[in-house]
Amino acid sequence: MIGLRATLRVRMAPSDVHYGGEVVDGARVLALFGDLAAEILVRLDGDEGILRGYEQVDFAAPVFAGDFIEASAELVRLGSESRQISFVAKKTITNLRGDSAPSAATVLVEPLVVCRAMGTCHVPKELQRHARELYMPALPAGPEPGTEPIITPVPNVPSDPSEP
Image 1: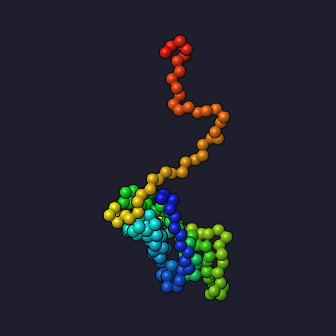
Image 2: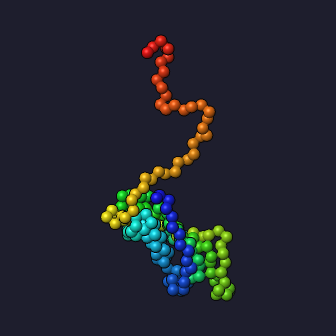
Image 3: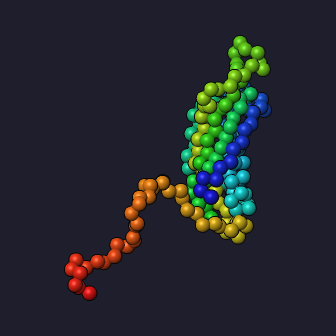
């Protein structure tokens, strides 16, 4: 459950442009986050619930028409009705502007983070259709077992063998 992920890849269209005729409206990226939250909630609860709000949104870089965006979400906290989800959107291909042909684009060697957010969703208990499974977080690997037996708890051995 915790760690459940969803990912979308989309190309920003000219109809997504808002500011100054070139920059995509940030609300378009947030709409992708809403779709990702709905997918996670449907997989988890069988109901898309509602995205109640964002605790944090950081628009880190502009997005332009023709850019390819990969948005992903991960469930990070699970309450009885609330779910906290972490979101990130990265530009993977950018449309070249300026003196280049309108169809010119380039693959970014290192995807560029354009937006990060943390959001809280709500699914009322009466709408949760999937049974909760026991969740056990992954623990780090312990030491390699030795050849000596491990006895837990340590037996109470008297220091004097004649004592009962």
